[in-house]
Image (spheres, rainbow, N blue to C red):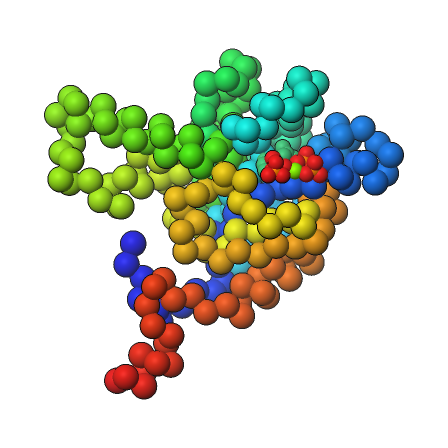
Length: 249
Ligand code: IPE
Ligand code: IPE
Ligand code: MG
């Protein structure tokens, strides 16, 4: 995507959040991790409500990574139940509020019930365009790139694509996130400063903001603070600093 250095970058159109810190939140309260994950769903609801009011057009949230299968079975089961918990209470509201829901990540490995629920959430909101909510579930940046490469290789093998035509733009279309623009801002609460396999390709030029708050405590003020930090950044996309471009006239 060609973006000139002077292109306006605020407000961020697409914000992506790594919803991290549920376990620590529960531990600090002497609660089981399960309750941390449930509290995390409440933080998601607050964030989805606040995002459009703060000028965000699209939001991607990381709910379960391809590496999270390494957790104890009981915790995986609780995490797998979260989309149901969220959609049962909120899908009607999302539909009414003009939110379009998209689920990205591998569908293999998910229960038929969960798959059906994701398909239903997408179908019921497909006509909406006021706000986009992308849910990364059983998602891994590397897995998504591998899956895209496999589909592309298949297309080449069957004559639908030619190696010489493969570009960044054509490759992007094979990713499960193809319907969304790249994130302008990636936020990670919880104090960890890593991407943990989130949107590896898409975040090439994203601004990164790390916040010292555990996800279940996340609210509108934290999101506003991340946006304020984003507004101070100068995005260059590999180009020159805008003042220097003017000076070079
Ligand atoms: C985020 O919280 C939920 C998922 C990763 C699915 P964690 O469960 O990772 O919480 P911490 O990082 O252990 O505190
Ligand atoms: C990233 O958090 C995945 C999600 C929030 C869904 P993790 O808690 O799994 O990441 P690591 O293990 O600390 O890197
Ligand atoms: Mg974590």
